[in-house]
Length: 326
Image 1 (cartoon, one colour):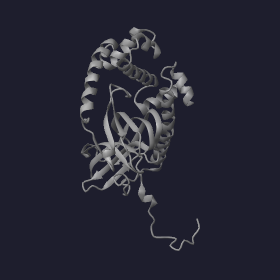
Image 2: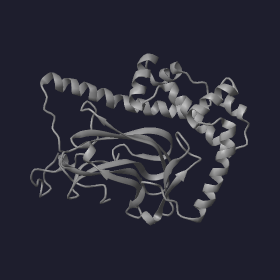
Image 3: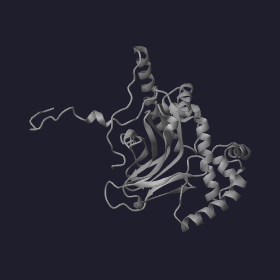
Image 4: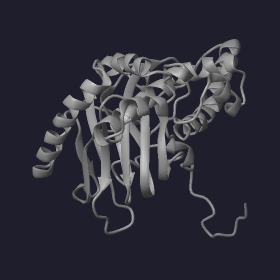
């Protein structure tokens, strides 16, 4: 995987007084320790969208008081627990409006809205149309789009397909499976002939805006029948194409069948950076969806996920006669 597995030296060292270092370590551990809990909780929510859910129920599952969990969930995801639950219920219901004949009032009750009117208000807040009007208009639009996409290869604004065997994969827009809004992007294996084949749906942009800063790429990802692994990736290059910072979630890969969940990458952008590349990687067969990606600047209290390959490089050759024992 030449595009992803490259060697470089870490570009930043932290120089703070003793109190500053201790504070940094505390915040760093707090951030890292909470994210697996947040991911497990999102898995729980995704499998219980049609069940009764409250902040107290979700917080109990996570093992926190509802006040503390409210704070850490909102900090990590950018919305409260119940806002997330409501948003996901509305998104799933929007797909049902387009692809089933289910009555609107039945959909409303299915996702625990007490009345059709309360469901309509919540739906309109996100989609700017009442459910019935949305069903009439978008069903026609979606059918026309799908008919067109069957006749030509789908292009996605801003994104392109690359990797070791891009001709064995396809990218596209999925209007049935999405985390929020009306669509998600997907990367799918059409045919894989050998182990180690991979592809990526990716973008590149100039690093100028983020020079000297620490940035966080976050988003939601879902997988199906992934036999290798998949995940987000991001790298920072200088003007010569040398990789300065890199992470491909290789130490926390996603595989198999997974529901929508939240993942992130945090990298530094050194002053000599030129280009930032990012995307989703799929190694082997299967399909992966991504949605609601976001870039933001974070402070040094947020731990970088940069892969430091240099720590594995020896200072000099050792054990050349194979006689030394660990």
